[in-house]
Length: 145
Length: 145
DNA sequence: ACAAAAAAAGATATTAAACTCTTTTATTTT
DNA sequence: AAAATAAAAGAGTTTAATATCTTTTTTTGT
Image 1: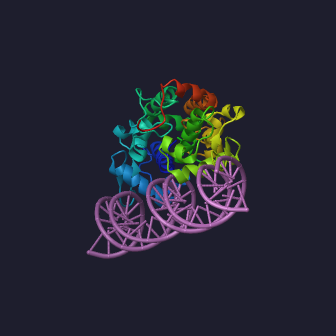
Image 2: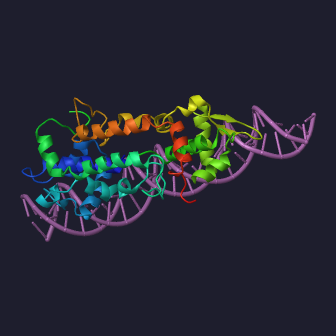
Image 3: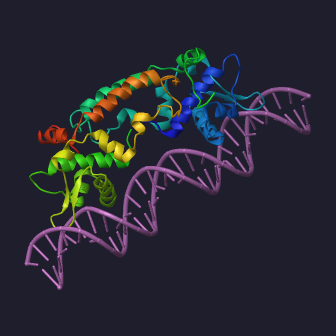
């Protein structure tokens, strides 16, 4: 579905959304730990997301990553687009470049419906929503306690 | 969604399903041409599918790939499982190994529905169905004429 | 039996994704 | 101002996916 890089990105963003706020900023080590991601790798990813203005960052002591209200309105979709590009929106299941409504591959019409739902899902879940969800204790982000 | 290898596999299998039958067997060159796939690569893939009994093959003059009735009942799902494994059935969107009903990731419940539909789609489309579909001329498999 | 055709098998090459290490820059605390 | 902290940036490595090339085996038609 998503690249591994993208999975790390999503987990990290959700993690910071939950942690930051009162607690201030979240460092890369804490992010790596809290999401089971390789530290240097997730650092690169966060760097990129920061450059693309999907998250804020600050260097130096007490530095780290954090969100302003505006960025908490970003959806999963925004992160996916930043990392994996638009492929989920545009790609044919069979990989046909020319697949379209007028020129459909054999599964086009059926997949269309699923894709619609998938896109709805990623566009209607914001980082802010996750903050609430995770605080409820009903969801988790890490492989073990 | 699926690996590129799997996309090639699906296209090739659908292609042969359509071509074979009356016409006898379909050679690897024809398959490569008819599905825009690299010849040697698709050859490897077909070899594997043949070994896994999802398609028949015959060497020598007039040899090639073909289906018996039994194999035409195989679904997309069977091919996907043979090539990409069970990941589409088992994997969490966020890549969490421990994600489950009891321990859901933040998008688990929403993704569950989508996954259900996706699995339904790949399990209920057989190669035989595609044969009919493609013969109708309403669907296509190749990037250009 | 022999030559030709075509897939099977084995081996190698290329590319892209995933991951790591080192150095630099910005910020803060003392 | 100096030392410490933490992200940014740059460069490199490893691994897995994708792709190609070569040789072998099977089958068929002459």
